[in-house]
Image 1 (cartoon, rainbow, N blue to C red):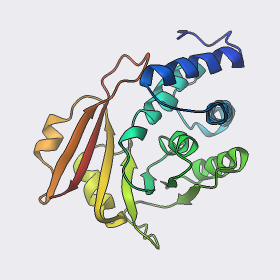
Image 2: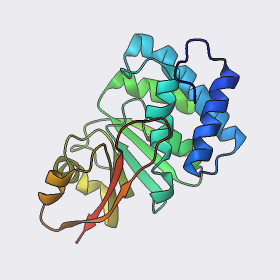
Image 3: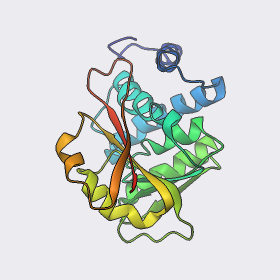
Length: 217
C-alpha cells in the first residue's frame, strides 16, 4: 500500500483499500468499498472545518480509520450495536457499510459530529444507522443493544460503568485497544469477565491493536 497520498488518484485509493481488505481476509463487495471511499472523501472535506480527526492524510485515514474499524467486524455477535463516543463515526460507519444486516446507533455528545454523521447517513443511504447526540451515561434507549462498541474510552472500567445500562442480558462490550491492557484487565468491575482478547491485524498499521470482548460473569 502506498505510504503517501499527495498524488494518489481515487482509483489508487480504491486499489489500496481493496488490497487492505484482501489482506485482512474480509469479504467486502464493490458497492460497500465505493461507499467507504465516499465516506473517506467527505471526512476529509468536513475535517477542514469541524476538526473530526487529527489525521489529515487519506492513506493514513484508510489504515487508521477504515481498516482498523473493519478488523472487528468478524467478531461481532448479535444484530444491534451502539458505538459510544463515535466521533466521526468510527468504527460505526465502516461497520454499518459492510454489515447491512446489522443495526448501528452512533452516540456522541458533540453536535458538530452528529451533524456530520447525519450527512454521511444521507449521502451513503445507510438505513441501518441512527445518529444521536448525548452523553453515554445519560442516554436511555427504547431498546437495549446486543453490543456496546467503542475505541474512545480511556479505560475498560469507564466503558463498563458508563454504558452497562445499554446492554441486553448476555450482551457484550467490544473495546478497541492498542497494546494489550494488562492493568485494566486486572481491575475490571466485579461481576465482569473477559470472554475474548483478540490481537487484530491491520494492514500498514505499525501498531499493536487488540479487541477486548467482555461479558457479565
